[in-house]
Length: 40
Image (tube, rainbow, N blue to C red; front, top):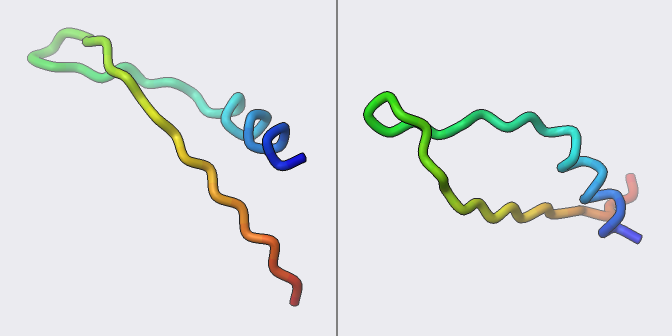
């Protein structure tokens, strides 16, 4: 249930390339999405 919500949220992010010495470089990225199920 939360996996689908996490994937939908991440799909809305916009990528900005990482540059090294003025050149775009390939990088590996790992994203951790944390949910909190709190009631007030």
